[in-house]
Length: 222
Image 1 (cartoon, rainbow, N blue to C red):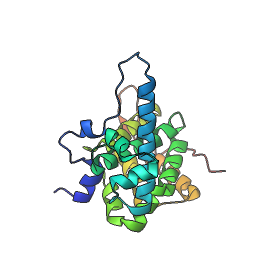
Image 2 (image 1 turned 60 degrees about the vertical axis):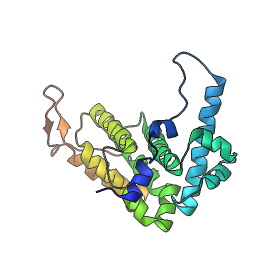
Image 3 (image 1 turned 30 degrees about the vertical axis):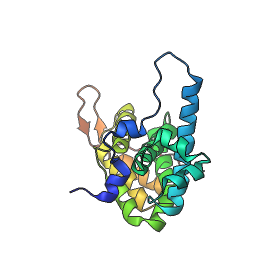
Image 4 (image 1 turned 120 degrees about the vertical axis):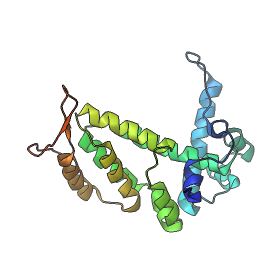
């Protein structure tokens, strides 16, 4: 059954979500100052949307987004045609930013930092205050939603790099911090337990085995 709150955040209601919220596309190999400027403007608009949502929730107006971003409404409409398109793009941008921040880190450190960032995220905190039902909807994993797809792909890659399985388990664990934030010390302890229980993938057979005899070290916060 469709949840209207969930749909608002993840599924734009325009007939063409791509046309409503897609970033400017440049031909490969062609450098465009105009394209770079449009990307910067889009980023600024989504930054304004994040601040507006953190303050007043998802029932923002296009005028609020434009004001928070410091641009004219006409500029906003050049990038997004509806509030739903803004919200959908905001979710994907925030997920991608979180993924980029963890890129290249050891798995344990990346999971601690990701869960800590989710716990302290201002939009999460704002929604917890003004629209807890929306936050609960955001925390439900939906493999059709682009943001969750990006998160799953990133976890698949990170786990495979350390010969681990258990993407579903880790994804659910991370999602739990949207509703129940934690402090870095408790998160680090949880990560140690989490990683100790994840199956180890045999590189030759690609079969997962229990890591019962393996000790996993996770860096503790300074």
